[in-house]
Picture (spheres, rainbow, N blue to C red):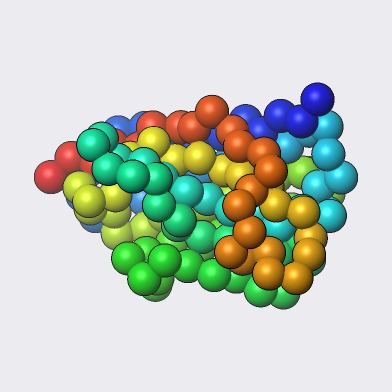
Length: 123
């Protein structure tokens, strides 16, 4: 059974930083691209960042470029999202997700999703 478990969310003041983690189990982690999405109240879920299975390619939403960094540790089956210069607009439930390594992995809908971790940024 595949499990993706996010952690590291919380309440932070504007301008602050958080580091999210997502621990994966039940899948061959190094064979999956990993992604972060977020969903704010009343809004649709949106893509945040993605990283290929061997970390040679990363992608970011324009809204987080230069502030967020995605990384992974295949030895620990964990993907991270370092979030800096946070603003109230970053308040959302953050999900990690896994897509099999394949051409077109960036746009491919993930096969597996975590339950999410809440990030709240106060102004």
